Length: 254
Image (tube, rainbow, N blue to C red):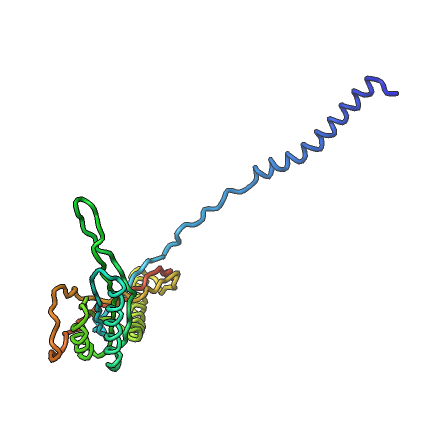
């Protein structure tokens, strides 16, 4: 049978044992925190780094003519209008496909209601049905003659030019080569001007071809339909400026 003194001594011994086990675990952590070295400075920009931009451009004539038309009919009977517009579009597509080298693309039908105001109330007053037709060709004169023919039954929305995928690829390859050569020349000149022997590339970005987007002409808003004997609607290519840009940084070397 234990006495109160013995029980008290046992409790004191147990507490001392617990404290004795906890202290060693806390002390090394505090010591480790004290001896950690300061974090090294990072992300500092190294010396001898130069950012450069070079570009190359050329004026190029688009190689495809484009003309856009619309078949439009208005009236109270939407079903009859759809039939009429479909017939106009079908005849135009057949005429376009009869010309060698012409690419034909049709747009979707659009049906819009007409509204009018009577005694302060909005009332429906018929429909407009519209469908679009686009023709393209590398033969500018042939497309101009086709455009004059289609204008007999369709509304001429506009004409323009565009560059084929092949022409864009060729121009991009040539301009990219020129831009890279100019970039390298700039890098070498910078190295020599700053007293370095040469350079190495750090990072470089070769941009995409710019300026090849189609250039549509203004719409023919009140254009009279040309006669079938007319030589055709003139479509001139003109010139577009294409460019490629190369940008990045180089590390100058001793």
